[in-house]
Length: 313
Length: 313
View 1 (spheres, rainbow over the protein chains, first blue to last red):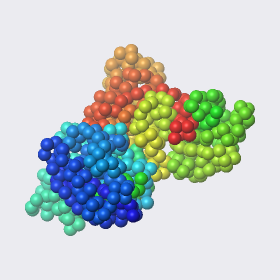
View 2: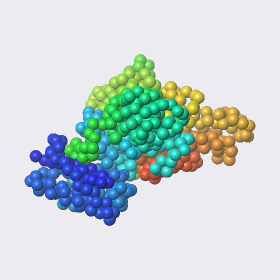
View 3: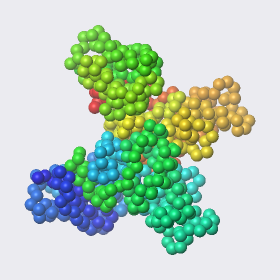
View 4: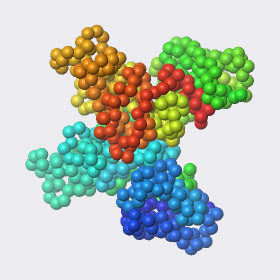
């Protein structure tokens, strides 16, 4: 039996999975991410944890096909963190080479974490059977990953699929984290939905359960499900912007499926009903057939996609 | 010596080129496109012309690596015209298989003509040395092609890179050819520039050479070069929209270079000076480094790119 490891490096913990080459997950665990000293311990810690697991399971180096790694930053096809990784304290360096050195020569493939998660969804989740896919992650921000012809679209510097900052609205008064105004992320992220809700609440005195207690993406969609009219208007605005942004992306890459994940996607299928009308309105007809799906792998998308880059090349 | 053919099927003529496998062009010629009877003669005519050229030059089938074909419609990775080709009268069929059959088994690779031209510009034109490229063709309409990791991004149904219909403007009164309003093509094509110019001319009585004679993309940019203030405003609006559209595309695919071609690009480098400020304003910072270049291959981009798909796999 041959094995592969999938590694998902986050700002607080590193998730690691051990997979059989038939894609079955054998074990998964986490280690803390030590970001002190420019995150210099992270790669050695991951390598040590993998080598310890191999010893524990009696797996030799020859039995390991490779290690896939997802990291929170732009990673080019060669494995270079082209802009470092702010959340980890990392400078610009070749993550693939560093990990290969620390593990004593096991082959490594590295990519951006959102792209890796997208690859996981194609391999074993919402995009199974498709080779052309757009994955969008609606969390604190809006992330994304593009799979074209079955491969991660990394782009020139590893920033491919960074769709959260597509410009959508000209007269947006608030500034986005990137410094621009009117980015997709300002309307379609969890924080964007809260912003849209607060803006709507301030417009008039329309009654709504959202006027009691804290407003979050979850309370907005819970209220929608309970028939709250104002919450539905907020969801419509969210869906209008996200559908429009996804239409532009679909015109560029012509996906077979669009997979929606991240915390906001926990609202379920009702989410898609707000996105699709706007998508259909703005998409170029030959790209209209793209199916919408919810992500299926949750927090394991990262380790599954990382192992998939090794097993499902 | 081994050889490859590059074929560029247009609505009036089919351009064909014979290339040595070292990429040198040996001969190029044209045959008429016979669109009668659902374009049923086109593939046999092309095959016959290629076989005749082989005979003329003493080239055996074994000496031909393959035939690359670009066609005006969506072509998937397998060579299927997924939506037929309106300009040729073609229904849905497998162009690759048909051409292989008619040539007696020479390997064929088929792709959308704009994507093929983009591939040509990467191989021998404005994108030489790059593997991640956006090519945009500003002609009667706005076409495009995406090269990701050195490969054509065909998408699920071969409509990848169809960037002309990205929605940009919400309050556009005129309807685009696709049925939507506010598409990139309505501002950045040759006809779009004329529309922008006529709109600007109607706004007030600002003097301009454009008030005398016919307005075209060429007369607008000629007037810009002659210092015409109103023409410069028109060029600024054109550049604003195109830069914004290209910024959205760059956020998705993170290109190293953006190559601008088509009739409008004959205006020269001055064109880029109107596009880049808007691109820089709207692009996500990690994708900001993309270089702008003018296309270099002109009408030969199609045959060169088609042969390139065979020679430079």
